[in-house]
Image (cartoon, one colour):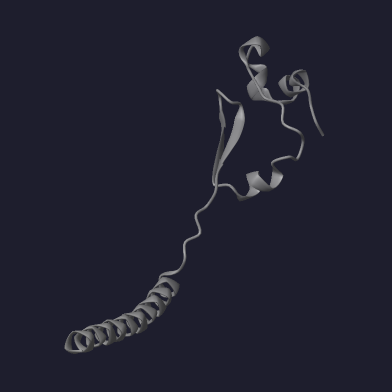
Length: 101
């Protein structure tokens, strides 16, 4: 249920000890950030822009998967390297034949 500033000061003890004029707030639509608040590690409000900023957990690729991907890339680079060496040798051979002719 959406509440007003006045209702919040009545409901929450921590606010009752404060002067309502000394407290600023931003009104967020009820439920708008529900999933963000559930998933985020932390959140804060940018006081200049009054935007809610979330910090989410970082999901990193497991080491075993990283090793597998690097192994695959290494194998592909080996094949490419062989092909380039062969192409370079063929090109050098063709240049030698051109010089002879």
